Amino acid sequence: MTFIEAFAKKDRYYFFMGELKDRREGVVQENLPSALFRVKCDEDIILAHLSGRMRLYYIKILPGDRVIVEFSPYDKTKGRIVQRLK
Image 1 (cartoon, rainbow, N blue to C red):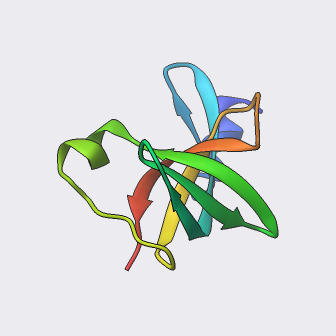
Image 2: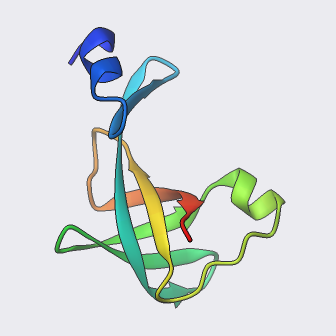
């Protein structure tokens, strides 16, 4: 997918430092040690960690919270929580 195609679908895909990222919405199922979480995204249970900015500003995540998870194109079973939704 090129930059133009990703920009046209900017609600789900975006480029970061030359790499295409995938973002999906999910619900936190379980808290784990070391700021890790089990998140249910589209019928899949994935392992996600908090982004640095969320750690910096002490944004708390609890089971049942809706979050946006960012995936790399290489591994779809692990991700980074980049935003907590209301």
